[in-house]
Length: 137
Image (cartoon, rainbow, N blue to C red; front, top):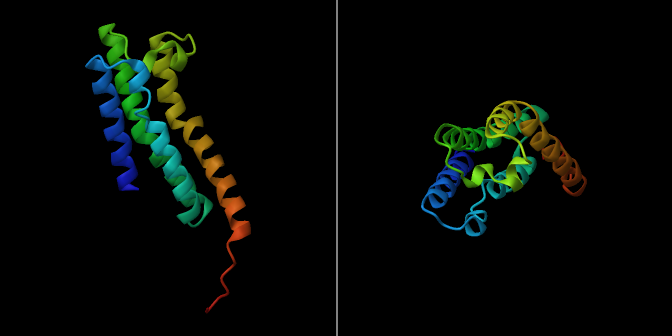
């Protein structure tokens, strides 16, 4: 899990830095924290044992994403400088204030729960294909 957390944080910092350096947003958008979260979501869906462990993994995957998002949106909010984190395609027309608060609230509630539900679906589907181990074998 530590590797995924670090990768998400590093990708977010790279994304913010590239944006601030003036790299076109059409290029920066490919530096994706979401792609790393998806890889972690799939991985932890299969390797974690128990629903509680998957729920914890879902929160741990979203936490670094939320931290970067909220800090980048707070930067936009405080400085007035537009960043890739608050463009029309990502903000759905919300103000930067509402977008920041939305990520803060969503990052602690529905976002990790949505990841958890996806993890549960993947785990359930995969459990059909993995033979059950017999006790003592």
